[in-house]
Structure formats: C-alpha cells, structure tokens
Length: 239
Image (cartoon, rainbow, N blue to C red; front, side, top):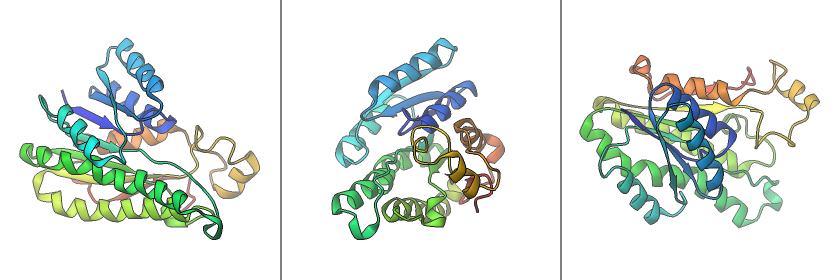
C-alpha cells in the first residue's frame, strides 16, 4: 500500500486531503504540531471508514527533529507521496510587520517545505517513484496587501516546485503545486465576508476543501504520471 505524509493535516484543507487519499486506498500519515488531538480524531475517522492512518507529531521548523521523525517513518517502508500543506498566516502591512512575523511565516511555509522534503528524496529516488504536491496559494501570484511574508513564502515554494520537478523528472517522481484561493474553513472564515468574496472571486463563492483535495488526489495518482512542475490554481477564476 502506498504511504502518504500530509503535513499541516489538522486544518480544513489538510484534513480533507487526508480523507480523500485514504478513501483512494493510500495509507495516510496525518501530521500535526499543535493540534494533535484534531489529528488523532482524523485518524480515528479514517480508520472507522476502513482506511489506514497514523499520527506524526513534529515541528516542521525544527530541521533536526523533522529529519529524525521522517527517517523513523521510513524505517520499515518508504513514504512515496508527500503533501506539503503546513503553513501559517501572520498578516500585517510590511511597514508595521515585525521581524518575528516575517521570519515565522517564512520558516513554516518555506523552510518547513525543505525540512520535510529533503530527507524523503533519496528514498523516493531509490524506488524510482514518488509524488510531491506542495500547497501554495493564490497570494503567491497576486501579492495581496498585508501578506508580503506569506506571498514571499508561497512564491518561494512555487519556484522550488519547478526546480525540483526538473531535478527528479528522470527518476519517476513528479513535483507539482496546488494554489488555492479563498477556501471556506479555518483560515478564511472571519477574514472574508460574503460581499468581499463576491467582489474578489469571479465564481462568487468560496471554494471547498474537498475541491482542493480532489486536485491533490489526481496529482498523486498514476493518471498524472506525465504532469510535473505545474502550479494548479483552485481559485474560482481569481487569476
């Protein structure tokens, strides 16, 4: 059974991805850092539905600890699907943004991407098969006000996605990114009201986490074996 690690899996998008991959027959490793109880609840839900899942707890910004945990996960069986979903918002106009706000967002989204992905590359290369999907954001292209840190981090991940796709293309490993727009759930609720969504999104509604998960599920499937280095927007035609 193919094993998939989903980081930042306790949130709305991450949990939807876990459920979808489990329903498609993958064994899912549900990662969390702070919201461990939510991750455990997702595992129990997947197991109750007949799927296979386990929890992994580590801070993606801690490079040494992350490497240890990932190596432990791969000790008996390779992890061949990785979904880098961990990310945070600490929005503020750049003139009023603290160095901590800048650094923490970059550390989770961009450095965290490296810390988790790096130790998984050689195991994937040895098996000559793998799927890496990075969850970025429409903000990487639009650069909204108050999100210089978040837009920079996600744009960095998108650039790394393209480079890594070229590096791994001959090894049977695909690397793509999914860039959601306004998705109903933890990060968007309370930030955008109905009028703002109608003004910003040509489809006049927020997206759903399941719609993001469906794209991820396709990208990790055999049907997407010739698709790599792509940034796929799930944003209701915002761009």
